[in-house]
Length: 552
Image 1 (cartoon, rainbow, N blue to C red):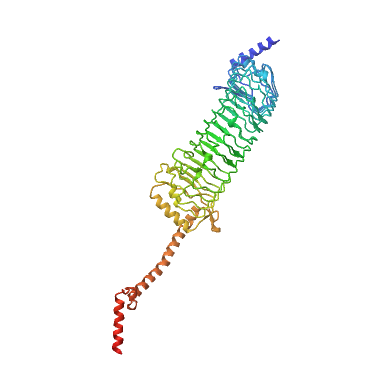
Image 2 (cartoon, rainbow, N blue to C red):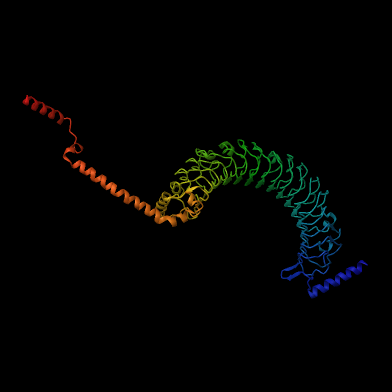
């Protein structure tokens, strides 16, 4: 009976190869060699897949089962997509006829409760296996043992609660493992055993509250580790096995309250560190000391009340981007990060991008950014800044972007524009400043000062910050109007106001000058012209005495 079935299948193969017919309701292409039967009402996989097909997709149908030997001999399928169906069962011998060609299998978005271990034993050449968003609750020991060539394994969005000791036996070539969106509560010393070749590991969106100190011992080639959106209260990664190759570490959205000394030790190659959305209120001395190659540090949306002292930043000689947005910082000391009196090439002096938005900053010192000579982008939006010192940016010659929107600036001091537009800058054409959503007082004084400054600076052929987005807050009748509209609508008024003031003052000044000249010309007011010297007064006194004696 089996010989008859195989004969029939062979006849189907010959027919489809010769005729090149396509499955009804599908889209077939011989260049490239694809068959797409997506978003239909199929409940089973058809048996007449064209023999030329290399990429086959049945995504978005109603297929519940992959039957035994559904793919006939001679097929050369390399990619098979069965995602977003209703799969609950896969026959043990579903794939033997594509075992020598299939390298990508997509089973995302189905209803599988276990990994089909026996079915996978026929796929030794599989490189990419996607099982995300199923109902898998466990990984049996040696589940993937036969998949010795697997590179990418996606098990995200399932219901895994723990990882058994030998779950990943045989995965000698695996480089990317995604376990995000499960219910894993802890990583034991053996959870990640047999993952010696993994480079990217995603454990985000789980319930991990504890990581054993030896959990990463068997992942010595790990370069990217994501443990964000878990329940960790203590940073334990620095003591957890081999982390010397790590380049990117994401610990955001956990429950850390501090960064202790040594908690991140050993990560000498780390390039990016993400610690946003925790509850960090303290960074201990030397917390980042071993991270001499770190370039990006994100500490946004924590509860830092101020900029930690310089000892906390020790070792960060290569840091270029730092985000402290969304904390509780209320003031900026004149020596930000403690860099002002340090020699060149020391900590925090390579910074090009600083984000201090969404804090409680009300005032900026004149020397805050003086040591950051390579600063290019500075974000101070959504604070309570009322004024900016005139020389605030005098030492930032290549500052390109400055964000000051949503503060409490009422009347700008245009001198800080001048300090930001440094004469030695080579990137002035990219300079931009965003001043929107400040309580600007729009009046003729603002118009006159901005006009005088912009005319003066335009004479130097410099591209200036735009005031197009500035919205008036005062006076009340202008609230909500743009400053540009005010200038356009009131230019003549302001010019006329100035002219009226000059016309009013000129007669008064003329009158005062005439009165003054009249007074000094009158004889009886000679006193205003020449004051008597000490030698004249005695002579006049003697003359008066002589006249008086003669009369007597």
